[in-house]
Image (cartoon, rainbow, N blue to C red; front, side):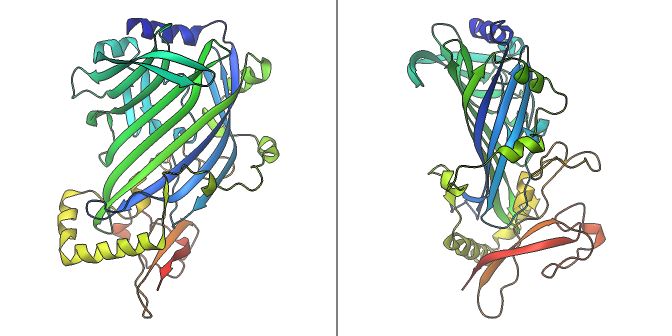
Length: 404
């Protein structure tokens, strides 16, 4: 492990790698489950497709430009993500791992860092042969866990090349102590690297999944964020342009300049939904009806009272993925100025509306901030109960749902 730690440090300082640029294509999906025991598989509520230009310069400058972003809203919600969810992880994470701008995971020692060598136990689990584009490589699978399970730490596996000690793959989650939000159920990461130009191990594929559990309308609910990225089209040591962009001031992940975004077009005939992985399930009318039936059953069984006593509550699905306002990118264009103590959170969400006289039905309210009086369909909340939630401001509404 000392060899792999030293090799990782040398890779960052390798004088032969002056800069690179690449294209990163990814999907960010927000899924939800509702009901006691979560009987319905996670279903997509909203899906975003992103195209990034990634720039890096030695020793450790990085910039990621969002040149394309489109989304599909399958059920009404209004959700925004932490800035670091909208891009990839460079250099297999720094020595200290943070996620969600430090609001989800903060100050966890990297397993292949000097501090990590004193934090973790390592176990050689297996010897494997992995197929990567253009090459077959023999690797060691090394299990990693903290020496003290009460520490904020990573738990998982590293896959290290036998011949040179490079990190080929990382797959891990985190201890309960490492998760900063009490509603967080689990955070998992997979990072795969590939050999570029026969010498440099650089990002090839990445996945992240973040699960939060709470209650929605007083019965159990789970919100899931999934991100999947493919990185390709590397150009190594191409010179001044990549270096100047990588070293430009400001946050690492930003929208590209307007003129660059204007030149980007999605391939003709493609859609966000059409590109989602096969295992990602879409919400259907039957799913909504099943949620209704589950809600009625819970009421009859008085399960709502038990849920209130044991689970944190959320006024909306989007509250299950609450993130502070700082650094979130809300829409197409430059990010908004910070508000209050500096941050951005989701407002609006799924809300049940009363069934209409003509039969059972469900409708949702997708909300975005809008001045002055609320539109029809929502009543005002007493001032003392607002607390910055979904109804704290007057809103414009979109309705969607199924009706018999």
